[in-house]
Image (cartoon, rainbow, N blue to C red; front, side, top):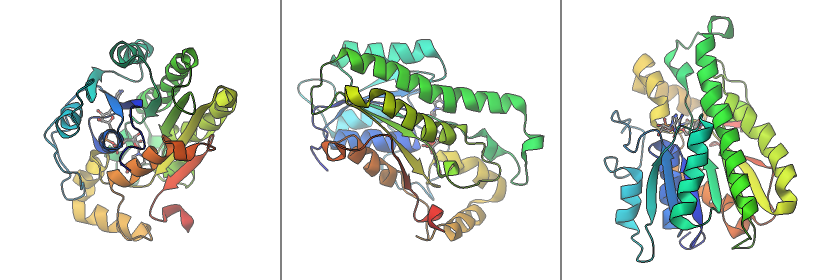
Length: 282
Ligand SMILES: NC(=O)c1ccc[n+]([C@@H]2O[C@H](COP(=O)([O-])OP(=O)(O)OC[C@H]3O[C@@H](n4cnc5c(N)ncnc54)[C@H](O)[C@@H]3O)[C@@H](O)[C@H]2O)c1
C-alpha cells in the first residue's frame, strides 16, 4: 500500500502501543506524516511477545517511523504527550500538529483502556466499581468525542488538499455488535452511534467519519487477562471463538485504517467495519 497516503498528515492517539503503533507504522509506510499521541512515548514495558507479531518493540513509535521512513522535507513523525480525556490536551495536540505540519488530514481516535480485563471473568455489572466505569468513559468515550470535535474544528478551517477535507477513524470494538460479558465497552457503543451521527453532520463538508471494530488482537490490552488466567488458557479460549482460528494481529487492523484514510474510501462514511476473523459471523 506504499504511497496511498502520500503526504497526508495524520494524528494517531494511543500510538505508543498495540493498534495505535501498528496504525502509525502502516500510515508512514503508506507515505503519511504522523503525529504520535499518547500519555507516554515509550512502548509498554511488559510484553506479550507470544501474541504480538510486531517487529521492534523497544523504540518509541515516532523514533521507529523516523528511522524507517526518513524524509528530507519534514519529520516523518513527532510525539505529543496527550491525555485524550482532557479537552485542553486534545486541543493542544491539534495545535501542535498544525504548528509542525500546517494541516490535519487524518485523525485516528484509537487510545483506549480496558480496566475490566483485570477483574475476574465471572464479574458482572452489579459488582462493577463506579469509578472504573467513570474513568473508562472518560478515556474511551469522551476521549473519542474530543478527538472528533477538535479534529473537525481544524478540518473545517482547511480547504481540501486532496479529494476531500478530512478522514476520521474511530476505533471501537466487536463488543459494540456482540454481547461480551465483563466488557463494559463504552467506546464501542460510542464509536458506532457517534460515528454515524458525526458522519451525517459533516458529509457535506467532505469529512469522512468511519469506525473499525476489532476483535481480540494481540496487544498489551490482553495482558491482564493473561496474567489472570494464564497465556495458553486465554489464547486457546479466544482462538476457539474466532472461526479463523487465531487472534488478530495489529497490522491487520491497521490495514483497514489505511484503506479508510485513503482515496479508495472516497464514497464511504458513517460506517463501522468489523475486522474480526469471523468472530461476529456466528
Ligand atoms: N486489543 C484488542 O483485542 C482490542 C479489541 C477491541 C478494541 N480494541 C481497542 O483498540 C484500541 C487500542 O487498544 P490496544 O489493544 O492497542 O491497547 P494497548 O493497551 O496496547 O494500547 C493503548 C494505548 O492507549 C494509550 N492510552 C491509554 N489511555 C490514554 C489516554 N488517556 N490518553 C492517551 N493515550 C492513552 C496507552 O498508553 C497505550 O499506548 C483501544 O481503543 C481498544 O479499546 C482493542
